Length: 171
Image 1 (cartoon, rainbow, N blue to C red):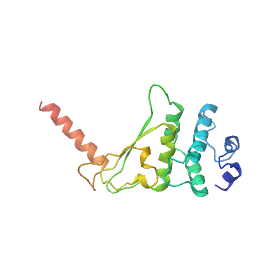
Image 2: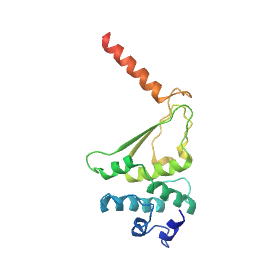
Image 3: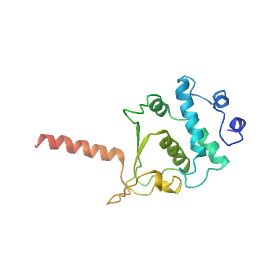
Image 4: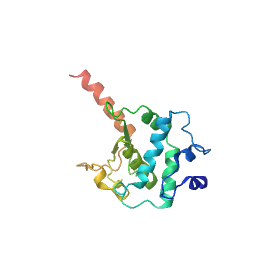
């Protein structure tokens, strides 16, 4: 993370060509267009004043850059195959039981939102307060009628699969 500070420009953004030279940079196999898109969107996010509740401090900016540079390969591929007109990529997050999303991941979700990815978070316990990091005007939130603190994705899928098999047999 220390070497990232040497890529920072006087306006707080980062020189994307210098970032690309770093050992931790792993997007070289993608087109220049995809690489530039990912890094330019990062610079755009850190300049925005309306995305996050609080202004990002230097540590937050560096944490976010490290998170962006270590994005999951599947997410990078979503961006690489991004079709701005036809199909918007989507990420679905399901929080089991009373799981929450830590603040670093909330920062990353803000970045992914800024890219244009639709993000759906299913949180049956209602305990994930994303609005303490991301400005509530930047997302839609729907509160469930019934809160379930013990909801588990795998058991939910199993029960829905079993019901659909039986419902087909007895129709």
